[in-house]
Amino acid sequence: MSPLETVTVTRFVTPLREGGSLPGVVEGDDLGTYVCKFRGAGQGPRVLVAEVVVGELARAIGLDAPRQVVLDLSSEIARYEADEEVQDLLTASTGLNLGSDFLPGSFGYDGQTGIESAVAGRVVWLDAFCANVDRSWRNPNLLLWNGALWVIDHGASLYFHHAWPGGVGDPARFAAQPWDPADHVLVGRAGDLAAVDAELTALVTPELLAEVVALVPDAFLDPVPGAGTPEELRAAYVAFLVARLGTRQWLPA
Image (tube, rainbow, N blue to C red; front, top):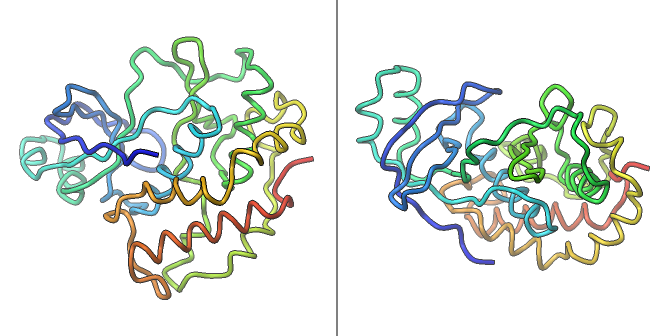
């Protein structure tokens, strides 16, 4: 896998006041437009780690997910922002942040549009494996764009790392943790999950997981007891994901 491209932010366009964070639309020096997830947001940089890992894993298993880049944000951008809340966020996020391609003209999935069972099954499998708790009817985090279903907003996945300020725990605990599909927006369209699991198990190997985790920038990896360097933190993420891969308590029947 190629490293995430680094793009310099040239203009802050508008905030997106949705969900628990405050992402924003920005323009880059490559003339691209991106949805920026800010490192200085209240949920902290671990959310950006989950975004990178799960977003790139989604692409690796054949799902449509926006291309991700690293966004370099200058303090000059914050200086000209009139909204005080946004200005504070921009100031707190000077440096490297995470961006995903803005999909112009896309609209949110409402649960009514027909989705192929193969696609729905992959989404459910990914969310179960990564313990994503935020793909419900209330907040699908799915877009329809150019006739395809796109998965977005994976920050609520990999919840295990939010306990790491007390020290890296036991991967076996995450591996054995079941996942509740009851509220998932696509579970009724997922078809034969056992067949999906057999197919994806051949794709999602420990080697692939290590490649995906390696894409996380050092700037998003805050040291914790037992993992004080970016390399040690990446190894911890891989250990948790590989342990999960070795079990199936998380896979819905």
